[in-house]
Image 1 (cartoon, rainbow over the protein chains, first blue to last red):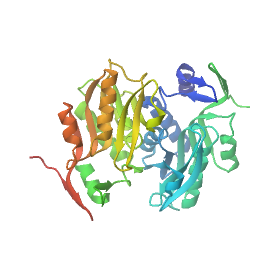
Image 2 (image 1 turned 60 degrees about the vertical axis):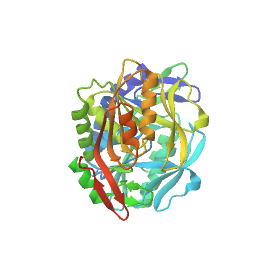
Image 3 (image 1 turned 135 degrees about the vertical axis):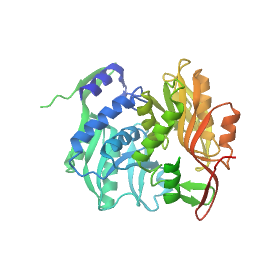
Length: 193
Length: 193
């Protein structure tokens, strides 16, 4: 999506450790007009799938999922990240690794909010190693719900999250795919084979 | 706001420790159609204040702030909660107490996102003792920005957060004000003096 790619080129900062900093418009300060355009694109891509719930993980996925929920007119759920020792009473859960923070956490969703009659669209801001998205997939499968697919704003295709989601048989739509990046700021987008 | 009060009466659960559980529509599963109505009301209340940024705190304030940012057509910023020992390099920050969790944390906003030329509307889902709202007020004041006011979906007026914000000379708008509540589910709304 050109609108998003242009914004990444304009404001994204490539930091050591394959980190793309986009906190001026995506994940601390959030340009909701841009986010709403991304949400509209997710609606165009997934509107025929019979989506009944949108699932994301706190915190930086919430703004995209919230905007998308307005387009789809369905509830949005955000999975909470808790300390692994806290447990997950009455919840669907999955253990996940945050590579940015170097810590493990439990991703949890109350058992009251997903059931076998749901069809769930998983949305997030970033897809790198796929830890959060795969954790959310595990949660949806525990609930017996159908997965409509996974949508992310930015995929780093040089990491293996995208491959792992596709190998799980799940449709993945990424609005900007970064094939390669290196400091101090070279960003190459994937343009198809 | 009747729409919100009715939903609280329908789905809210009063738990011991003055906790109102509204996670079926406000802070885990989120009814974005309801949230958009709340956001529209905040727009009506604050649209003449020259708001340039909307500030909230992760995670449960984000959906309201995101929806409001679409009405105001300004960026939304969410303050991050980090461990006090992590520090806040290059950030405005405030130490806050989470009474629900019984822990302290640092609320931080990058110094790049607020400045003296901004006029900031602070939004959150809940106001109880006011810890998060007062922390955000401290952050806005550090930046030199003007405060348009504080808006919350639900205020518990039997706790002192509302008083503390008004005593700080800040306009507070609460869309539902709970004067009293006790298990197993009695909720009394404030109806004016």
